[in-house]
Image 1: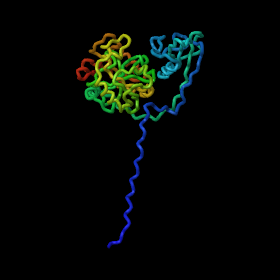
Image 2: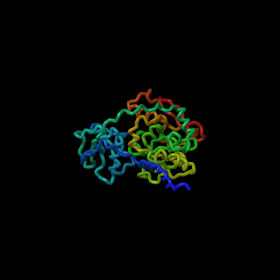
Image 3: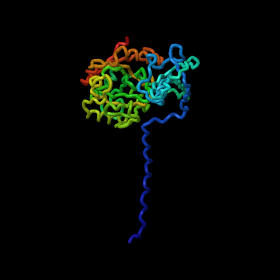
Image 4: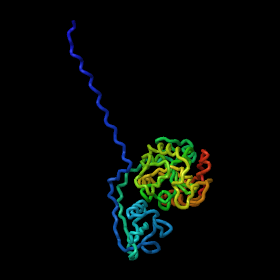
Length: 354
């Protein structure tokens, strides 16, 4: 008989794969390069336009920031504007109103028992290396193609066209994110509804939005994000969750839960739009390249008008002036045909600049 042999040792186990990295948290990581802004209190001092120590950030002169009900929110609204140097608030804390100021000259301000002035010192981080040049803005045909082909997927471009319309959660202009966040909507031929049938707005670059992680969370309908804090009740986070919000939106019908103030159910498309909440600070950092076009809606029922061609042209002109752009750098002003969108046909067209 053949001699007994010891069994061969078992082959070594392959090494365990490294654990998958944890997903990023649904909030931005603050930059360590610059300390936070510091605020200095100047009690019983009031500064305002026309030779009284300051110019106004908001217009018309004497306007306060709508919806700001706390000192923290007032300071955040100031920090959201690159030209804001301070705020004036009533000395009576029971009636807080936030007046944002620029070009402050304290020596020319007036003593007042009714107001306090708070000035801010900002510490800017070192300039980062120059980023690669942004992609060329999309043509009208490309924006229409995104609208017609959009459907629930995990990318901004694949879902359709991301738009923001003027609302109470911004400054005077559509690109002024004064609340630390900005509300937007994704639209496509299957989900053609916007926040307003008349308010002017901006089309956002899907590449910039996705590359810079600007989407905070999303909802299948109006989420009242002005008052919902840190995305309570959101159905999805980041760009990866947009398809989930669109799929849930498709299952919903006519609604009136989004109505407040003058606009009617027709002005709000019976609340059939979705809401995508954007990080305000990251949005502001990507200006002007995040804006693909300005637009104004046409051919929709309007019971309470919120914008028109002239206000869209004025917003575009202010945008050019603020960022030092020429007409040849940024020529896009579009119309959005509400009726065409609801028929599932291409709704975007070039609008006259003058």
